[in-house]
Image (cartoon, rainbow, N blue to C red; front, side, top):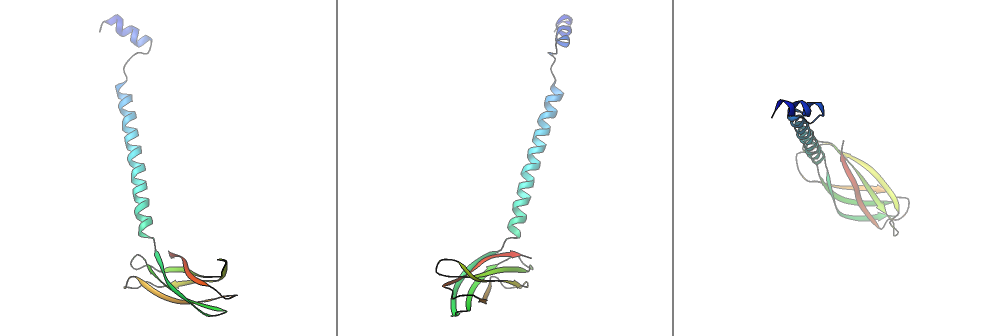
Length: 132
């Protein structure tokens, strides 16, 4: 390049800025890696703390009590709480109770719980479980 051409490029801002372009790309790559890392870590910790619960059956003992059988699988050495619910014909809640379970070695945890009801239930189920 001639000296006159370089002077014109400098004067009108047509110089190449390789350093700035490289820095911008490095910043984009670092931010993208941080975002991917955050979502990966969040996924791992969320799945590690998750509790899976399955209904096994229910028995209507009388108008004011329903027995619900279920099992849950939780991470090792964690205490768990579960909401057990009794429903009527129209799927309205007629009884529910929160039960807490201490960590145990065996998996899955099979439980049978009595749920007090205000009217006769037609079904019983475990609504949700979570790590305490």
